[in-house]
Amino acid sequence: MKLTMPRFDSAPVLVVGDVMLDRYWHGPTHRISPEAPVPVVKVDQMEDRPGGAGNVALNIAALGAPAWLVGVTGADEAADSLQQRLNAAGVYCAFQAHPEQPTITKLRVMSRHQQLLRLDFEQPFETDGAAVLERVKGLLDQVKVVILSDYGKGALVNHQALISLAREHNLPVLADPKGKDFSIYRGATLITPNLAEFEAVVGVCSTEQELVDRGMALIEELDLEALLVTRSEQGMTLLRRGEVEMHLPARAREVFDVTGAGDTVISTLATALAAGESLPNAVGLANLAAGIVIGKLGTAAISAPELRRAVQHEQGAGLGVLSAEQLIVAVEDARAHGERIVFTNGCFDIVHAGHVGYLEEARSQGDRLIVAINDDASVTRLKGPGRPINAVERRMTVLAGLGAVDWVVSFPEDTPEVLLEQLRPDVLVKGGDYGIDQVVGASIVQAYGGEVKVLKFVDSCSTTAIVEKIREQGADAGSV
Image (cartoon, one colour):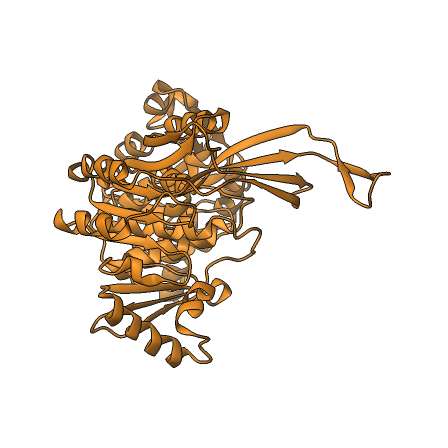
């Protein structure tokens, strides 16, 4: 499966479901309470994050997609905090407020990145289902996918009406189910239970084949198009009508906190579908996103640059030889992570000790080093007949193998000025004995505030001298 990063900015998604506020109190613990055998936490930081359906919408917005959210809250401080944070993230909220009921809030007491206690403030809402349906109806013309984010808290009381309404508008409906009655999701495009939720409905699955058979039966029973079972450390299983099952391995290197992982899966999946991705590719992206989010603390949204980086590494395009187009994306991603980009260029026909030392010093000027090399035709124009000694593919392979080099790209022009305009590196580095004003492209980099540096080669050897010596030795050998 070849994954690509979709255009999420044209992928609007509507989330309908149970919104809640995740509240975190952080602080150190240095002693045990004299009143009970529990640690005393000195709270020094308080943090609010959207949870439940709010976290789903937040994930969609973090990917750069337009997100709408319909849900139910109280008329209280928690609701104000929730709406403020969602609006600030770019989520359009349409909440039904109940003055006599509290906004669902989950308070977690944290110390040293560990959860010591959770307190839940909630009671099931008496939702006006008809009013929710009207709000949804007014938004369907603006979106491409609908998510039902069900936590069983009372915001969703009319699943079938919502599914029918969305399908009438030819919109896919994805549901993150809750409880043991999956019949309320009948007719949805896809549901995304975790393994425990799935087995609570179909029974314990002792083998892969049993999971597949029972999953396919559930698809038929509920008139679904597909079923995605998330399986924690065992990854995910996608089942579709008339298709072979697809098993995806878990991507997380280290599990820190699984809170909100299901939200990340369904939000990434829905947004990718809204962007025009096929279902297998959308599931692949959701699997990568889940691997990122469970390495974070608490409910957390992943950003488009984080997902792009995961896609690049998945495709082996994170480092090494890249096309100019791939390099532009890689540089954008590195900048999003606060990394400083260094650029150097040359023919690098025969890489020698002087080059290695120079490139190591160039790399020390920032976080990422780009080496741009002239293609074969431009080397011939610059150096004359008989050059290059090594074809561009071989030169790029050698440079990519050096520890100091992050990315290698070739260019057909005699100078790298076109690349410099496109990449806008933080530092342009050149080796030699001339002044900064003599460096080709210096004015381009300086115009946007970048730096230009000239470094001395570590030793006196040069490619031209090496080539001449080889030719002389060949001539001497031929005269004997």
